[in-house]
Amino acid sequence: MNIILLRHYRLTEGPSMHSFADLIASGLRARGYQVQELTPPILLARLAGENSLLRKWLGYLDQFVLFIPIIFLRAYVHPPSSLYVVVDQALGPWIPFIKARPHLVHVHDLLSLEGALGRQPFHVLSGSGRLYQRWIRHGFRSARCFLSVSMATRHALAEQLVRPALLSEVVYNPLLSHFVALPADAASVEVSQSLPNLLPSPFLFHIGRTWYKNRLGVLSIWEQLCKQGFLVDLVLVGSLNSSLADWVEQRPLLLPKLHVLDHATDALVVALYSRAEAMLFPSHAEGFGWPILEAMACGCPVITTDCPPMSEVAGDAATLIPPYPTQPDAQEAWAVDASWRVQAVLQRTPAERQRARQLGLLQASRFSHSHWLDQLEDLYQRALYLQESQ
Image (cartoon, rainbow, N blue to C red; front, side):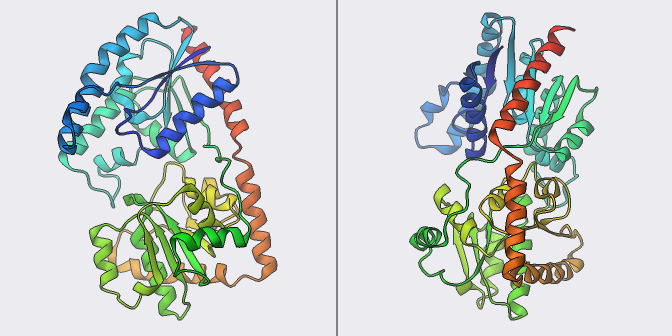
């Protein structure tokens, strides 16, 4: 089987999508497969120089005008037994041009599309954003075979398709090998280099900057803990937007115990997981929920939302809290209730901590890289067979 991997334009490929595509390419090559990577060349965008707005629009021309003839030409020269693998359903505008060839689309989340359709109360898109998401949907609706990263994502996908998929399965993301628990001393040294004023204080940890991470919920829970006299620091990876910055400025007593990092290296993130009292992750929604898995693999207790896919990834190894309410007058009560659940985690006995740690490590071990590759091999072969036999 020859695999043609359609991946994001390099100028807009985020770190997670870059890692995901690399995992597919390197993993299947190591198992003897021919993997050819296909992505729009950076041509017109080079002309923009330092003008980011011009580079953005010229990049659209690279992706959606100049790249289309390349897809057509490649479709004629690739061997008949090739399978086109689209690494992200967000590349939907390209799918109509390869739909006649055997193909498979990886589906990560449909949260922006749901926002465009008015189904995400905490996410409002602009007019152009709504049109773009509908264009993406028009594209991926022409595909026949899909792999979703969670049951929640597969269910959301089924609601958007206009015909039954030929193949639609769930393959959970794998745990990356560098997420392992560090010894306390090593973790402390790594953390101290970036946050010298943090240790030895106990702290909660959160990572993420997008709307669905519910960072206001994180701050609200932490505020309630402090009001109840349970003084614990909070470390956030991901800079605060203007509304969250205003929220913090209105609470000057909390400022000394809040630590915000715009970015963090993988080594620092692993150290923060390893050193934190708990990872606070009350997301509105997720496609998969990488930080839940990463934290558990590092021995960090997880507190997350009691709905899929967060509950899918966490299993019985996390403390679950109700979803953040949409009604403003119910949000403070939600934060108070959640803070009591966080306190229960922080006040565990050593034996309870060890048991929770072992449950997390066991849950994380179920998301192995080799098992993920086994599933990809099987399902890629099945997608190719189903489409060649039609």
